[in-house]
Length: 275
Image (cartoon, rainbow, N blue to C red; front, top):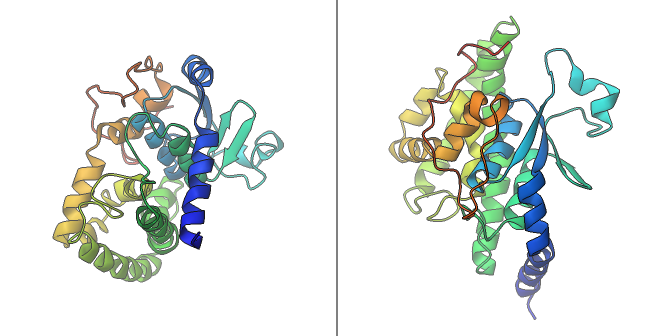
C-alpha cells in the first residue's frame, strides 16, 4: 500500500470515528454547542460560518475582549493562550478556529454544505495545501492589515501607515497567486466552496471596509471570488451580530440544510456598536 493511500485511509477512519450516531445527532440538535467568543472577532466568525453552513444550533457566550476577560483565570482555564473562540461539544473542548472548523466539518460531513472533499488522495492533499496557504501566506498579511486599519481605531489608536504599506506589498504577491489559481478553478481548492474559502472570509470582510479593498478589486478573478463567497447567506448571518449572536437562536433545520432566511447587510466595525 502506498503512503498516500495509507494517509487517505487514516483520514477516512478519522471521519468514520467522528461521524455521529443517530442518538448523538439527536443530542446535538437538542443541546447545540457552546461558542465562547465575540461576534466581531475574525476567529469567532470563522467558527460561526461553519455552524451556520451546517445549520447547527449553538449557544453564544460573549467574552469581553475590551475589558480583558480573555486574560482572566476563568477563561484561561478554557484556553491557556487567552484567545477566542473556545468551542465546547460536551466533553470536547477546542480552541484555534481552523481546528474547530475542521472538527465540525468532519463530524457533520453528511449535513448541510459540503466543506471537505475526501474522494481521493489528490483532492484531500489539494484541500489541505490551500488551507495551509491561507493560514501561513494570506492570514499574516491580512490579519495585520485588519488590525491596523480596523481594530486599532476602535481602541483610539492610530494606524501605522508604514506597516499597512509593507503588509499590502506582501498581500499583493499572495493575491497574484490567487488570481492565477482562480483562472483554473472556480474556488481556491476546487470547483466547489470549501473550508479553504470559508477560512478567508473574516479578514476579507473587514478589508472590504478599508483602502486595501483596491487590491481585491484590481484583480478580476479575485474580485469575483470575493463577491461570491461574501455573498453566501450563512456568512451574512455570521456577520450580523443580532442574528448570529445576540438574537434568539433559530430552530434547527431538520432537513440538515443550512439556514435559509433573509439576511441584513453584514455589519462592520464601523457600524453602530451594541452596548
